[in-house]
Length: 136
Image (cartoon, rainbow, N blue to C red):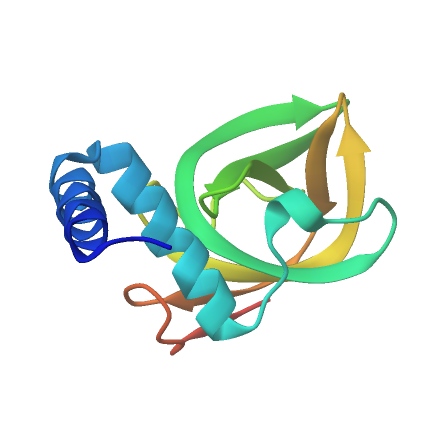
């Protein structure tokens, strides 16, 4: 049985840990909380070849040719693992840029071990977790 001093020490230790956590760890926790609140699937829990809805922050966008067709690639991160979104035939999508929050819906596949959704339906989020404008 824990004594009162043990519990107080535990509380102080947890409070101190929260204050000195790295910014990345805090951001990861906030992104995971937003995913839970929106009721979407955590990227780390995705199953290959199933349809899923995910949300996260766009970390990078790149334009690269997939054969002869241009493709816009966006990496999103939900605090657990990155996911790649690829829009074939698109050079740019208004609003999809690093720092944007969005939800995406489509069939998950693995490309070189990275979870990927091709031509996803998406919805831009103005901040974390408050949907407004739609896409596709």
